[in-house]
Length: 252
Image (cartoon, rainbow, N blue to C red):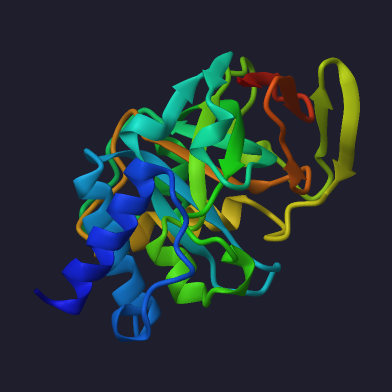
């Protein structure tokens, strides 16, 4: 068995059993970001294919990073989610873009204008950040990418009418996260990537280069606008990214 397959086996088993790994054994750790993306792609295929992407960046100058979103982990507004599936449940309010057209398979053809034109609607999203590693913050960036960028679940709210994706300014957007009707976080311009539109401009060619160009129906979520708040079982959460609607989930 190749090291790559062995790493995917470990991550897949942890995903299904809801148990946590200390990390990938040294011999199985991806040696590069490219190797991490290869492990990520293989893991998503094991989980039944993808229905979109998450993308973000550490700051306004850094190269973004991304993960495909397993189809089974993209849920509708109001989802009830078992908290016991995850060791850590970090909630983030985000801005999602649903595509209405396939993007080209040629990375060079995935220009910013072409990407924006292919977006059908903007939706509020809330991600549960969750890892298959017990000490996920201490793992290398490559290990975290292999583990789907510490993705647990994405809940997708209703489309927002009258909003053109090119006009969204995440640098001034104010996001609010509430628990049982009580506000627990309010942040303005808090997305670390700066302008989330640059994330779309990067992801289009990247996805095409990986042989998985963005398709009609895919949802792309673009990183936290609220900061990260740990969620608890038995609580109802609502996320509002500015004027872009509200998305809801309950941890049971």
